[in-house]
Amino acid sequence: MNSINFLAKLLDGVAVKWLPLGEAGEFIRGNGLQKKDFTETGVPAIHYGQIYTYYGLSTTKTKSFVSPELAKQLQKVDNGDVVITNTSENLEDVGKALVYLGEHQAVTGGHASIFKPGQCISGKYFAYFTQTEAFACEKRKYAKGTKVIDVSAKDMAKILIRIPCPENPKKSLEIQNEIVRILDTFTELTTELTTELTARKKQYNFYRDQLLSFEGTEVAWKTMGEVGEVRMCKRIFKDQTSDVGDVPFYKIGTFGKDPNAFISRELFEEYRGKYSYPQKGEVLISASGTIGRAVIFDGQDAYFQDSNIIWIENDERKVLNKYLFYFYQVADWNPSDGGVIQRLYNDNLKKVSIPIPYPSDPDKSLAEQARVVAILDKFDTLTNSISEGLPREIGLRKKQYEHYRDLLFSFPKSKEVNA
Image 1 (cartoon, rainbow, N blue to C red):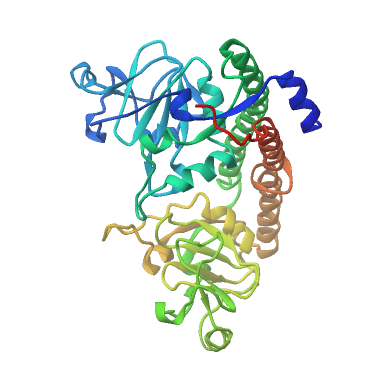
Image 2: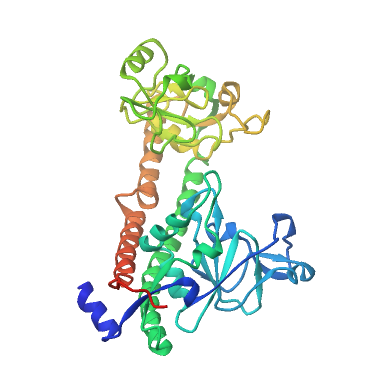
């Protein structure tokens, strides 16, 4: 699609003007709604946190309610209005928009604003605009705060949006609705693929659980302490790390993600030579936070936070590393509750039971483990791989959607703003 020709045909000669959102519609800040106020039934209520957690771009029903008495004190959300978040710990979550299409009037709270579209703007057009880089740049200009970031309703109203021929609302909405229709098509395609992926994951989980139950197979349940020794890296102190460096240091918060701390090459070589260090292929697991989250060590130079990231040093002549990886997805960890955060202590891990097929015949046992791994690898590729299967297709569709979304909002910016 040629962006210039397509937009020219879509606009059909009409002028595009940049308007402050406050001139295209009205912003009303929500008020006085707390988590404790929600009920199972009553008046529909939109909680700001749910906008970027549970909803898509639009909804006909809310997931929360408040009492009719409280609703009288709150700001009202009508059909076609857009609820947009003002406050979050992450700037990315500020400005998330939800078009309300419910049959009954709803309410919202103080960390969100209601955008009531005027005659020259569609609520869904505005909601799609909030996903663009142009909107992101605008909201960054007005963001205040560090720990908690806020873009007020007053400042939201200053953000500029491209409106085709705002002086002709009927024509303007026709153009906007065509843009919305195109973007809805891409969104629906992604939704269908995501639904299919969810079904595949359920299927994968079913077969994984069946395979690891070993019904009708000779099996012995052994403790992880019998399988191998619990290992962890030598403790690294904060003053031994830096924001940049030679070797990534993974903490529980960055485990399996991008590192945000590093240690020197000298310290790494010293500790790797003196203390426990994983072998390539061994399975690292989280012992706090998300208990049992597993990552297969790829052998690249890296160091791991002691006691929070641990592994079983097992003999692959008895139990395959990849078999352990899949078992960790279904293991009953039984962590300790001794503090605010649950922990998987060494003694807890040693007591975890794992099924070993054909324990009296090592060769047959390894062959059966390998068969289970091969089957689960295929399902894993379909459901989790970023280079194959449905996730790759979903990623491509999202990139395609973002391309056309940005294209459809890339009207040339005039020097003057319509007043």
